[in-house]
Length: 110
Image (cartoon, rainbow, N blue to C red; front, side, top):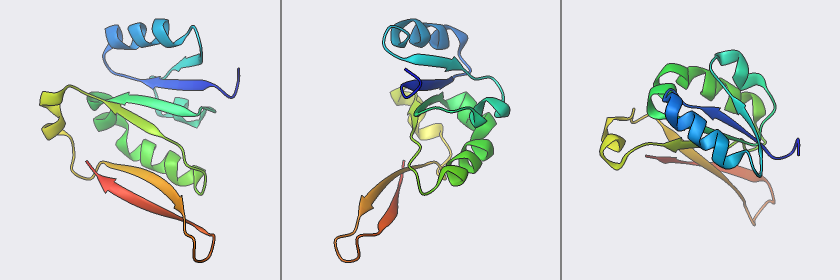
């Protein structure tokens, strides 16, 4: 199960507990509440808007440290709050280029 670890970085305690209970049946979950928790080993981090605002620099540093390995962060928010998130928030995906077989990274702005 160590390869199936989800880091829950959510400021909303009720949502954090609901996700831990729901996901805990199939995955190891780690509750994160500090920058140090971002250094733990995980395959997915689920983050809410308030936690993103608090830990954005640490998240970017963690992703950069993992490069070239893709480390996904999933932002969960309400539809109404999407417009309030920092426009510098990016989702990334990697794709292999057919020409040279090297990985290249594309960023998609929310």
